[in-house]
Picture 1: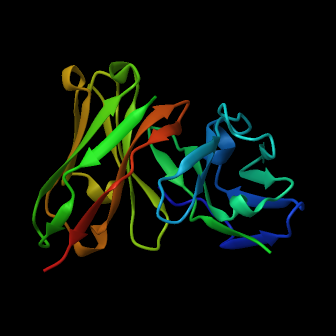
Picture 2: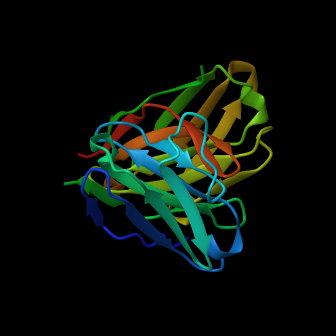
Picture 3: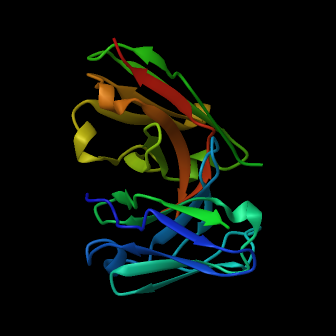
Amino acid sequence: QSALTQPPSASGSPGQSVTISCTGTSGDVGGYKYVSWYQQHPGKAPKLIIYEVSQRPSGVPDRFSGSKSGNTASLTVSGLQAEDEADYYCSSYAGSNNVVFGGGTKVTVL
Amino acid sequence: EVQLVESGGGLVQPGGSLRLSCAGSGFAFSTYWLTWVRQAPGKGLEWVANIKQDGSEKYYVDSVKGRFTISRDNAKNSLYLQMNSLRAEETAVYYCARVGSWGLRDWGQGTMVTVSS
């Protein structure tokens, strides 16, 4: 049940793209299609923005996209907007009905 | 509209107990796995426990095994977390969430648990 590895911070100017990585092992990210991403604004509950590696829940803008290669998943936010400034967390199914989260990445819009 | 509302948080001494509740509405409560996730002040998210639709299977993060118990009452659309032998490092906001494809689709607003003497 080790945490997934995310960079602590990422940044970009409005309109640019930013990509966040999430590295695990073959026992979690690499072994299942169940990688999710969450956005959390200060003082608020997390919000699901990507599930099953690349699926977007209804209402989530298509500026948010997800992918996976081997043991590393990625979240890309295209066309950065001021409201995208938030903390982002990845999670993965880790077998035996367990879930593991990443440490979180703070995205700053410059 | 899906709603999850946690309650039961508060101040408790180290070694003490607390029972959290989560009331669900706006969805078929009994057909979803449910989970508890916590977040210590200024820290990241940590999965705590999962429970199957009928309550027959329960899973925990290693650090709470033997001390925390997750349960549910589908007749009352309610999820619970009984926390015993609490430790200072378990001070956190505790969230309940609905699970779908192992993504946490809907979250409550959270309830704060403070473990301190």
